[in-house]
Structures are given as C-alpha cells and as structure tokens.
Length: 66
Image (cartoon, rainbow, N blue to C red; front, side, top):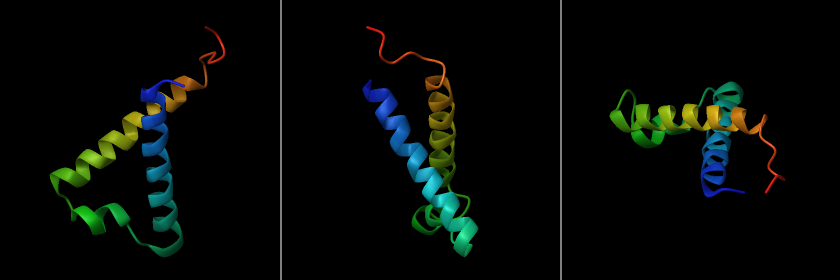
C-alpha cells in the first residue's frame, strides 16, 4: 500500500473518531485540542476531507495490480 494511502487512512480514521465523539457525547476533540475557529482546526478539517476523497478513489483502484 502506498504511503499516501496509509496517511489518508489514518486521517480518515481520526475524522471518523472525532465525528463519533461529536455524535455520542457532543464533544469535538479537534476543537478541544486546537481551539475553536483557528487556522489549525480548519487545516485538520481540510486534511481529513482530502483524505476522505483519496479513500473514495481507492474504491475504484485495483491495489493488487502491479
């Protein structure tokens, strides 16, 4: 698996855990760590969104092909 795909997967997992915390406990871990409406918070959300798009593209790739 390409290193980019692994990084994207890690950020997607982080985003999923954060959304789970928001849904279950109304607790936003990203905003707690980096602050509300800061550049870092926005950057994390952007990176998680891009990672999600990369993971969507993985659905259509044949990773076994060499």
